[in-house]
Image (cartoon, rainbow, N blue to C red):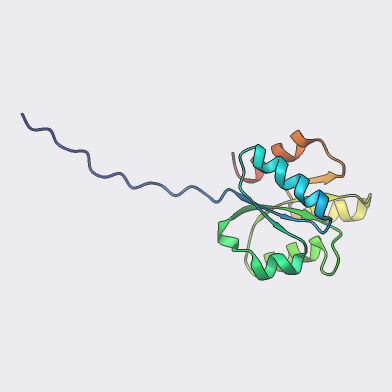
Length: 134
């Protein structure tokens, strides 16, 4: 008796799951990256918006955890620049500054979450899961 072999199945490519963390405070960046890594996410850290633009492979990034107040270009400016370039990444903003106007701008522009530092770990993980469509 002959058995037919199943045709090769093409593996479906899963969407990128790397989370870029753009944060100018090195200890905060490391903390966020560690939290994400222990939660099963690959991470890529950047100390500034400019570093992100010059080094990030955007096709590999699923979402960005982005500090609003960075030295140089702000997180909001980076997000607008990405959108203007046709790059539509899901963004989770983090900030240590209470600025209602900025928060409203970010929320109206469609960020996944706007988290105030210090934020509970589960809020960040939940926001990343939503951003990645998990």
